[in-house]
Amino acid sequence: DTGVSQNPRHKITKRGQNVTFRCDPISEHNRLYWYRQTLGQGPEFLTYFQNEAQLEKSRLLSDRFSAERPKGSFSTLEIQRTEQGDSAMYLCASSPLDWGAEAFFGQGTRLTVV
Amino acid sequence: AQKVTQAQTEISVVEKEDVTLDCVYETRDTTYYLFWYKQPPSGELVFLIRRNSFDEQNEISGRYSWNFQKSTSSFNFTITASQVVDSAVYFCALSMNYGGSQGNLIFGKGTKLSVKP
Image 1 (cartoon, rainbow over the protein chains, first blue to last red):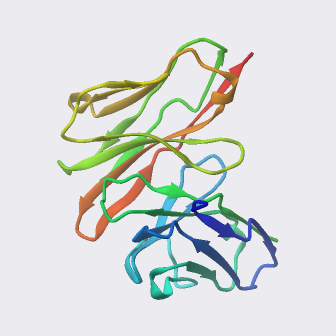
Image 2 (cartoon, rainbow over the protein chains, first blue to last red; image 1 turned 30 degrees about the vertical axis):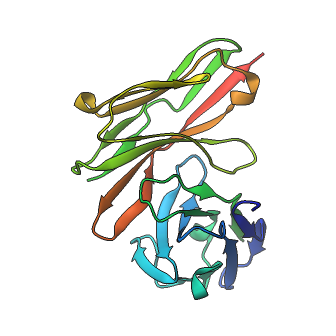
């Protein structure tokens, strides 16, 4: 396994456009997380899946954001009607079911909204 | 409220010096895990160490060691004999187990470590 993979690595979009990011977790991991990281800050939790079920969403996740994990495999994060404030690094992580297990992170997708 | 505070924004040391990164956490839960992650310039967060709330034994792993003290809610991380390759941003994180929140990490703002040759 090559670890957590995220695509694209970079995305530049115009304000108001929709964007979609993809995350391929480590195959045997049940849990998948999305985080957002802005410059000089630590990652902030957005949402997480246990298999295909989305179990929690942060208040940071406005109704313009939607995430899916069909069949409990890869996940997508879509942002509709992007705003400049959405510019950030979007990180995906996966972990086994054990809640104390370490999460493995992808390299992230850097979104720039112009 | 759950919170992680890393008071040191940036630290600069010369190679071979020891360096300690501070972390203070807040939680009302009795069951939790604490982590340290490293984020090099490439951007990928790399897991370093983990400690659960029931085990205050401090350990050493290679050049890394940590000091977990529940009485002061601190989880400090030390790199011995620092190397240039240790230059990165280091994050302390808290993971709890309550309700539907299992495994979600709450991160501090990070400490940027620069190790100069």
